[in-house]
Length: 75
Image: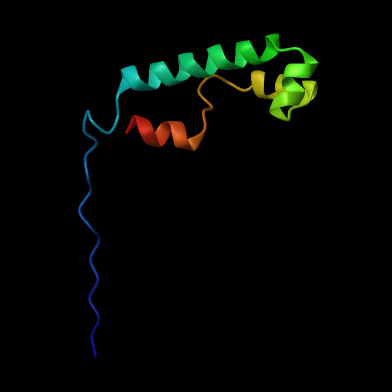
């Protein structure tokens, strides 16, 4: 018995899949939200279930490091 396999054809990225403007918007949103996170007091962070150290850690992440769910919406 002979088994033959083939690789699927390469798919080229389309403007719908990758949008530089969309990626820039994600980066700006992440930076803005992380900046706002730093401005919350300890009580507000506690309401969110975060410590001051966790908030600082999140705020110090690079702007391009956004959650996978955000990137999926941008495609």
